[in-house]
Image (cartoon, rainbow, N blue to C red):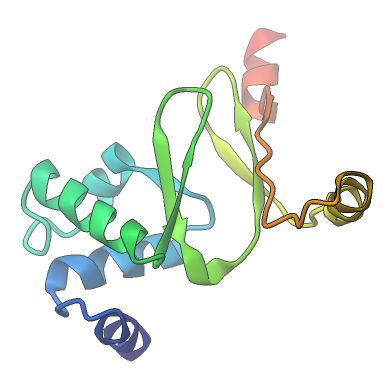
Length: 139
């Protein structure tokens, strides 16, 4: 928690129960979460309403403490920025998200930079499939 307090202070943000609760919850999650999932799991004393949650998410994302990604289901998903570069696969049937441990695209980034002259800042990849549980249901 002290790390989060320092991170907030370094960004000139007031240390609040709500901001700390959001950062702790997302840091503990193995996968990104959308606002509805966050609100379902968050301490309601720290974040009493969706309005409060959206305000906190926007502030933390604006200060680069959270990363947000828009997935093909039309929802924004959030994760703490300190977790670094990660990729995920999303089940097209149930919406479950699973983490992919290794990024195979670093060579692609280098090749694209060499071919185009661009400096690649980052890449965004969304993989969509059917999770093992949904595959079993379809059998």
